[in-house]
Length: 438
Ligand code: KE4
Image: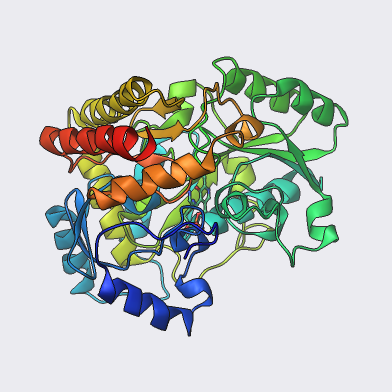
């Protein structure tokens, strides 16, 4: 029985997955290594996955699903891409880690800088959390200011200063911020609504803000694009007050275009954080930006940051091969078309079934909110019908489509999905909306 008292739905029989879940809960808190995987918002058990292949994942009971989670974004090429696996295997033949610099880390940094010229200097880390946490420390070290500003409903990983009114896991679990985050850690973090420049202007006017950090295109309240004028105005306002603008592109970097959201928006952030896709499915992330800011980092500067496996050669190899494939002609046109086919079909089928939905999409990232909309910030996103979202999630899973188990997340199409796969996803949505929700 799920938290909300609804009976579990999903594939007819998942004995192995259920048995593994029971075992897991005896040794891993909640049975998962990251909270949102527990499916607690959607009224069913998590599926334990056994393998992935292209656009598909297979659970421990052998059920097959078309995958719109893409491991929360990294798998833009799909699962087990042969060229990526080959790049990892070749790197692995030379060893896995050295605790010393390697040339492939230089190639990785140069590749990121070529893609996003704002990243004049780059430091690789192992997770998006590390990237954003360090970018904030750097901004504070550079400006000498303590206060930072984040957007309500945005999620930037689980460092204390950013786990304040977070989106993603915390929002999904209905826990604003988190226990264990001290008042002191949260005291210097100001939070304003998304798409509210007036609120940001008021906070900036005090002149004591080290940085504004934004999800360049929020995905952790669901996909909620900035208003068209927002990016440029935010850039101008922060620059005018000596406040650094940190673009969290952990989701959007190489997702919404090879140059990320900053290229779409035509702005140059002071610092950028990337993750997910840049690791090609292995643990890698990075932050980078203005040389005068980045060169405050140890060992040349006074801001400390470190990591045993930062720039891990296997992750670098997987990431570089992924970015190489993404540079091939027609990639983003294909990705965006797949996103458009699925998102437009879902909206149309919901309308036909008389179900109020609002679909937000940027390229191959999208969210169908179960409400009339518009959804322009976290407060409006929270007006969605979570019961209906849960029913949609369970119906799609029962029909062989794997969705992110939260209304406050984005779904992702991958290059591995064929037109026929997209058609199957649309048919599953049509049947779920008409038969399960209609
Ligand atoms: P990681 O520490 O999970 O690698 O990255 C944190 C992070 C930073 N910034 C943004 C915009 C992010 O979306 C994330 C992590 N995203 C979540 C879900 N959207 C990862 C899934 C999970 O928490 O299990």
